[in-house]
Length: 303
Image (tube, rainbow, N blue to C red; front, side):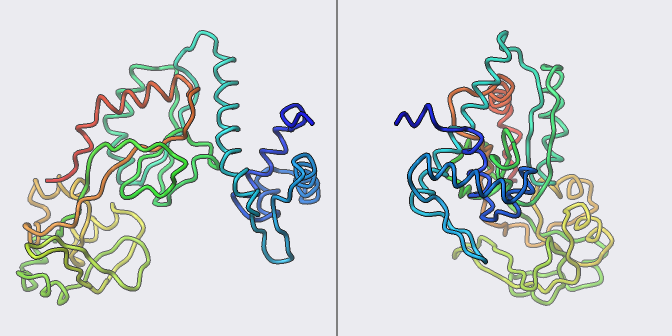
């Protein structure tokens, strides 16, 4: 049997989405087909390959060993097919179309100030979609071309390009420090209340000291999901915060915020651009990667 001739790419796409979500209900909703249609398509693919790909029960869907192997390779295959079709429909290799990006809100605001405007001015036929989220978006599932990430990249199916580093600093409003005792040691931080990102019960700050990295718990008084809100609350004197230096630097330089324990910062975290593997990248993606390379210095976000 010629498997290449008999393999239906639509079935393969339906399998990849199902394997990603591990739910026939959610996958059918994503694909906008009925659950029974999706189930039949997976059965047809299993019959074609003569192997079971998914273990189904009333409560859970799991990948078999064969399904795991196919899932990893099928993502690349479908991505290559999409890029190939994109190349074939753009014979003049023009830099055009929609470039879909993702970044954390803070990093997204930074790149939207310089990196993206410069790129758009150079390539006006490209329209850019920038998704801001603190979640690590799945590039395959979300149809993203590239994502900017701070910290370790755990998805080994992606190519990563290190751009620079970022670390966090402790800040407070001068008026707040006048009312409270200015912390002079790491342990003194526990006597203060923090403004935090995300809804976490236990908040531990990591600080690099002469003897190594120390962890300190600073009880939160306010939690929110955006650094703009964190900074606004700190400016209003609500509490202290540990935030990325590039988020607070303008306020520090203007004197509206003061650094607390300025010699103690968090360990530096790498900043990456991550994108899907494959040889046939659309021209818009390859040009944007080259554009990032020319602007790498903007990602050196440590003091």
